[in-house]
Image (cartoon, rainbow, N blue to C red; front, side, top):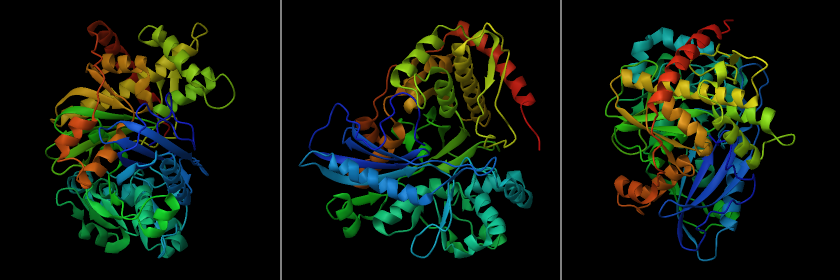
Length: 514
């Protein structure tokens, strides 16, 4: 999910790094929330350049969130073409890896053309279908099989909604693909997915790591309505000759499947063993910890890791970076539209001058018409008075997100997972004050991973699959470059314990039941 906030690249333009040079490189494609991007890395994990292409999200009804799935494909290929054109002569692309927003979905016809709009992860229309899935198997039963508790967030619920409400579109659909899968098809002609994407359907058995035929049969869904599952680290094909010419690539470049953005982010942050937790701090937030076995905690979802062997837990928050982006646009934008880098710097400075607790302002930063675990939840501020300014509102939003992160970490710990350190990556990881707030609210050391660990992780997967790295440990050693830890302050942590209790009380009053 493409991160808003400071450090954002200019859409449609290569963003040079400090190490642009000829030589062997890896190319990562991210079919994100706000657009697609192609990033080029050297073999030591340094981003050399990035090209972005934006696309919009539309909300034709409250709680809906749609995108034109054709843009997932065309914008991704355009970004690759732009990135390849910016490479220095003599540069060799060793492999391409892919990631993307997940779970989002579109049906495709026989020739791979979308049969309707793409429904993204933020779309909450399929509440009734999710309830039906829960009712048939029971919460504990379906969680034990799939690692997930059904919600409108999931692909399976969205597919059932389409069958019930868009029967013509459903009938025209041969297979359901997620955004990354659609681009893999365009590059190689293969219709495949990996375990991280398959897990988000609710029809994938997390323990056998295969499609659950009995679950598909129970809903009268054909086995091939979803693609074949391959390993995230596997080469699934080569860039076809025709598309290679369009992109300016030589023939035969291997394509490594990659994984869902948050899982790839965990690898890019070096979270490959128990003890650390990855926060992908973008438009939304995903938190991923490594476990040997799925936890018996219903609100914690599970995926196969993008590396062989372990699982990752996941909990998420829908509007985190988007919430502070909203504040920045309303209160700090120097001109209409997006705030500039100077506006972000001013926000960070002003927020740092506000005492913990934001002088009594408490915020719930749920601005996307519901949360993935509670579609009825809405955003709120409380404690406002004339003595408060924009910095109080901004800090309250930062603290509100940090409180939600603390709740998610506590949830994972309740199942027995070890969490000793929070590793943050993405555009919002560059907000120094926010990292300090997260450390103080959670009580954990916070380590920022420069750049964007999601695309770094998928570049690492491309290198693992293509044999550039000996193994996962070699890829982590060469490619993960962490900043010094921000340690929590005990005095501020005590103050934030009070804020956290106030935040939980406000949450209970902000639910709008329908």
